[in-house]
Image 1 (spheres, rainbow, N blue to C red):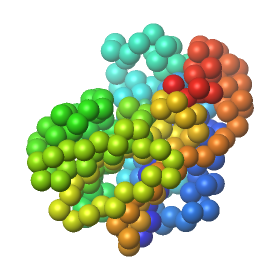
Image 2 (image 1 turned 90 degrees about the horizontal axis):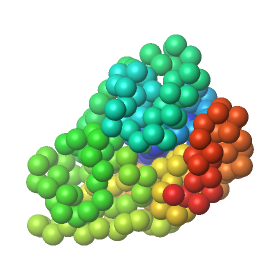
Image 3 (image 1 turned 90 degrees about the vertical axis):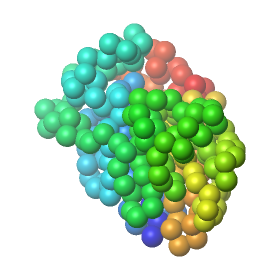
Image 4 (image 1 turned 120 degrees about the vertical axis):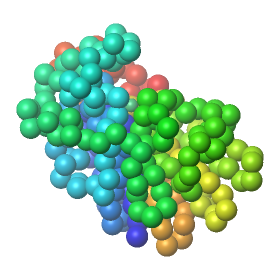
Length: 246
Ligand SMILES: [Fe+2]
């Protein structure tokens, strides 16, 4: 069984299609989506449609999905994120908005052994970047592997005994063996708005037969995504940052 894991697509249709095409070539049997389908980018309706058509084994909401759906008003958002959420809401059909509203909060199970979460399994809005925080999460909840998103940085926290090590960011091609007795918090990185200074779209493949996860990056037509952002009337900064991966 091979699982495609996607996170933080952020209304970037071109990046989403590139990840799906590359993943199809590598081969996968099922998928998991870690939230933030919308926000920031210019194609929320199209990305929601793609994710509904994908029929993931598990799909959870992110903080941008909550605000774009109207569950929350985004009081804690910066101005750029808030402007984008308002435009994204306008671009969505009522059906897609209802769908976003129906997405469950993490953590949810992925198969027998793993969890998926947006921020962390303890808090869907927490940004997990350092090992001390990871250690607190490993101690606070029982799981062997948790896939999470939210920071847009592909990375791995590994716990062996009481020690937590970190690979941050995890570069393209990184492979991690999920060994028995070790525990993992793994972020695939962002499909639609990478922030590790690598502008390519990111996704992860979990191979249950070999107990290995592999990090992948794929080029996509960034210019097309930028044009969609500008044409939607979104702040130009949101287009510019895509080519720098920040
Ligand atoms: Fe996000």
